[in-house]
Structure formats: C-alpha cells, structure tokens
Image (tube, rainbow, N blue to C red; front, side, top):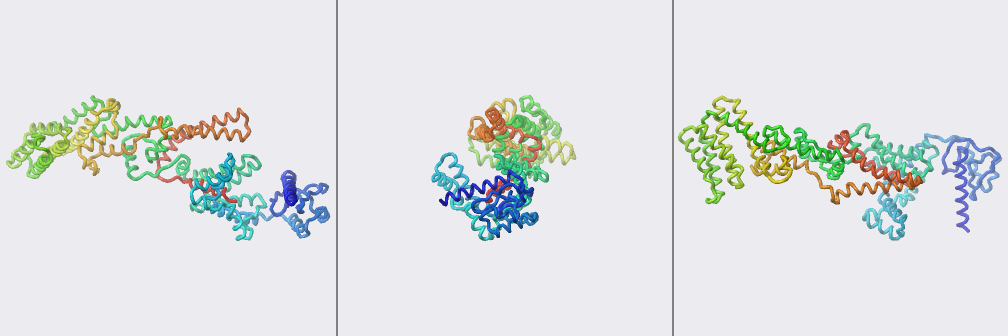
Length: 598
C-alpha cells in the first residue's frame, strides 16, 4: 500500500510539473522548482493538489483559495504566498547557484573515476550484459583506481551534509541555471590553471546549447559537444595554432629534429607537419591524402637536388650525364689552380704523410698492402729533406691516383688514401697562399669540398635499386657513402653539409608503410567504418527514416576523409609544424569532469 501511495504521489507531482511547464504559470513553485515569471491562470481553474499537499503552482493562490488545497500546512501556505508576492532576487539566485555548481563540480572531479566506471557498466548492461558481469568487467578493465573509487553520486550525500544542503540548491531563474553550469565546470578548469577558458567558456556554451535543445533528444549531445568545442573557439581568437593542434594532433620535436627540418627547408625540400614533428600517426594520416602523397613524391627529387648542390650542380637527378659533367668541371678547377705551381713540402707536411703510411702499414697485412701509399710518402719525405719542389704535373698525377684509391672497398686503404689526398691538397694550398694567389686559394677550397662530396656520390649512384638507376638519391644510401669516407668526421659532425643533409634526411624523410599493414588499416578503414556506424546510429536516433539515415551514414563515412584532407591545408600544416603542445586537450577532460557533476 505504501508503494502505491508513493507511486500516486510521484504521478501527481509529475502532472503538476507538466502543467506548470505547458501552461502559463505563476512565478512561484514549490521550493525545488524554477521561477519562469509568467502570469497566473484564471481564478476559475480548479487547483491540482498532490496527496502530500503539493499545490499546482498554476492555481491562483489567494488566502480565499488556499482552503481548497486540503492538507496544505499553514506554514507552507505562507511560504507560497510570500514567494508569490515577491520577484526572485536574480543576483542572489545566481550567487547561490554558482556556489552550488562549484560544489557539484568538485564532487564531479573527485568522483570522476567512479563515474566513468559506472558509465561503462551501464553501457554494457544496455547491450545485454548482465549487471553482475558488467560491473565486474568495468572494474577489472579500468584498473584499481577506477575499481575502488566512489562515483560522484556516492560522494554527493556527504557533500550535501557538509554544506548544509547548499550544494543541492536549485536555480530559480535562467541566469541561475547558467551560473550553476558555469560553476560545475570551473573546478576542472582550475586544475589546468585556466578556469575562464576551461570553466566559464564551456559552462556557458553547454548551458546555452541545453537551453536551445531543451526537451529534445539532442539536448545531452548538444551540451557535450558545446562544452568540448567551446574552448577551441575561444582559444582560436588568441592562439589559433594551439587550437588547430588540438583538433589535428601535435608533437614535441627535439631540438635536433627541429634543426634537421630547418636545414631541409633551407635547401627547399618540402615536408609535411607529421614529418617535422615526428608523429607517426599524423604522418600516416597525411600519406592517405592527395597533397601528402604529392609532397612525398616531390621531396625525393628535392632532396636529390639539395645533395647535388654540394658538388655545384643544380639538376634534380644524379644521372650519368650530370655526374660526368660535375667530375669534369671540378677536375678542371684543380688543373687550373695547380698549373705551373711546384710544391715544396715542409717538415710538418712530411711528418703527416709519414704518420699516414705508418698507420696503414700497421693495420694492414703486409701481403695486402698497396705500394702506392708508401711510394708517394717516400717521395714527399725526400723532397722535404732535400728542399726540392714537387713539379705540378707530378702532384696532379699523385692526386688522381690517390683519389681513385678513396673508392676502394678496402677500408684501411681508403682511409690512408683520404688522408694522403688531404696532405697533397694542403701542400698546394700553402704554396698558393705563400704566392699571394688568394683567389686560387678560395677556388681550391671549394673544389676540394666538392670533389670529396663527388666521390661520395659516385658510390651512391653506382649502387643498386630502381630509384638509384633513375638518379634519385636516398638519405640512407647517402649516409652510408659519406660515413664510409670518414666515420670519425661523420660521427663528430665535421664532414660538412653533405653529411648534415644525410643525417637530416634520415631523420625527417622516412615514410611509414601503409598499404596492407595493420597500422594502415587502423589509419584508413577503421575510422571510415566507425564513422559510418556512428552516422547510422544518429540517423536512427533522430528518426530520419531510411533515406535520411542513409544520408547521414554516407556523410559520416566521408567525414574522416574530409578531416584528413583538412589537415593538409597550408594554414593547418603551418600550425601543426610549430613547436608546442595542443592548447585545448585539458578542455576535453574538463568537459567530462563537468558532466560528471551530480
């Protein structure tokens, strides 16, 4: 019998509330209702009285009419009459609502792990999982923190007792409703030291969306979406790059990666934002777009052009014709600057040559040693001891022979040849400087650097592979060739721009495999299918019919594609390539915390 009375009580209250919302109502309700500020019903309308004495506020409440509501306590009648005769204090209502909202926001944050657990359990039950198993699954899957934490609903009774019921205050005006919602979001915003951006902004947006869609199926989704996206709109005004990074992803590249990207940019090599910041998921998404694939195709030729510039060429492919022309041009510079110049080696130069020969002999089996190194060193030492010049023709012949040995597969011989060639060039440079030929000194220095790079590219372009046959240079092949010339110089960063380009290319220009891989499937097919499923669900929930649901499904299926293409817009790419974290990510967490408020 008690249960029946309770049911009737609830039904009567529901009827009174329904009439209050659907008819012109007095700006007075029971203490837990909201003032709407409308005119009362005509006095002729009969009052609606609940079994506990709750009077429909649409009844004209006058001292003469009150006896019609049997069972209403005189004190309560006075409260009703007093409230009817005075308008609500908007400022006081907003203040009390805001304070209640802050309290509820704190409770929501404290109970967030438990609320998430219960939400997951409820979702499992909704799809048919028994309550016992759904609760166990939600506790086990989320870990001990979520399993043991109370929810906001669990904490609320204690919070109500501590605050003397102030946390339960219900807004009496529309302003109060906004104030309470803002208050619910402020604690979450305060945790990231941005209560205005992540508190007031999402709170106001959420309440505005709720008011707009109040009473419809879209009210809750609208509140969630508005709260989650409002910070993005606000932040876009002052920090558009941070907002775009929040929407499309971001990274925190190291200083070395930033330097590598800057070097490639200086040489005109195009890069995507994902390559610049080193985020593989972002890069996979970019490579699924037309602009992303075009950049990947362009950067191979651009990188080859950058490398060829270190030997004085402007071509985009290292074809046999380009390499032959470069070798002839650089060799002509050597011939020109050393023409008619006899070199007299000094004792220091002779000692350096002797050290190279000694190291080579000590590290190479005597039966495998090339006599060329020792013969040239012996003649240099003899010229230095006797003060005799080395004729220009002889010097040129030695240099040609030694340069050929720098391409040897024998690492010890290659190192010795590189060292001896440097000694010969240093002797020529010193002689030119002593003769006051400063222009030739500068030309020789440039030719020396280009020739050394040329020898590395000879090794690269003689390798295997379809791209190599087409004259395209890969960063990995370049790194291998340059490092083999002088591993110490490469490792210590003293090998020049060609080594810097090799290192930068290896760092930045790597592309992830996509086709047929699980990662490629995750980046392309799974988002398409998930989005299509969401579109079908929303279309069905909105009761759009077969045609409308089909349209929302197709539109949602193409949404990930549109999102990927949008990420390649120049303004977006520029924002994503900048260093810095996303500005808005805490806002999404805060939105969740705000909605966890009881």
